[in-house]
Length: 303
Picture 1: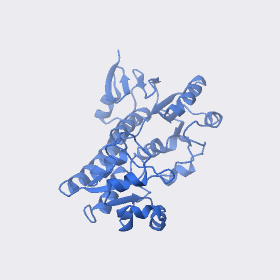
Picture 2: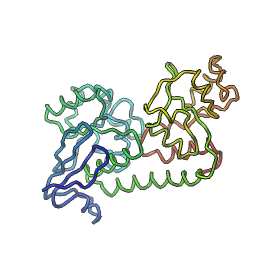
Picture 3: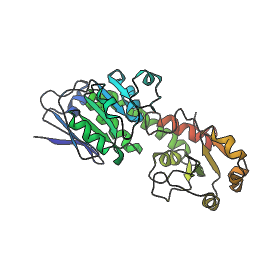
Picture 4: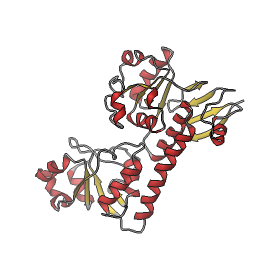
């Protein structure tokens, strides 16, 4: 008889009488042996797991980072061309893109588990891999809560529940430390620049919006539900952010751009570059990302 032990969004873990959760509590990192695990992923597909994954292809930079953080990086036999952190990831074979991946390249690595980002662009790939007899887990990782649930599930899949819990607890503790440090400060209004042509920013449901809030800022587009809305210079002017947050290469571009001079924050040189080594992914560096953003918005607030 199966019972649900964790529920985060639509990703659910259901196991038999001897649960992975019980083993994690006892301190034994080994997976359950008396019954299989059932995981229902974000495509509503069910993955049955009786042994820890040993040969993993991760087609999402976030899950690659998580696997290294929980001590399972040596099990990776394939990753995408975008996976650059930690440095050890660069030694894992590159199998191409994360969306609409090269199925032949993935299968050539003989994986026993493939991790996909749960985008509609990857539904066909999931079906093709499953038809080839490969276990597939498709997950969304677009928020702090989703990072926590995915880390927990990956810990269960590789028999590293305690290390996964430690990673989640560490990130959560840093985020809370930043939140406390900025709680009493005035909220700096922010435009977060993610792309130039067209101009793309972050909306309410982006994890970056969460990080800006924790860092003591207010995203001027937090009323837009889209994760990555396209906006105009005219609308940015009307929202009048105090600060523009950008990646380092964008700073000189905005300063030199005549069209961008209509934005008061640009004219006032209130353009701040965040650390792209830690800011940009809903992953294990989110605590450091919050520290970086907080110190940009409120210099010296977090030590």
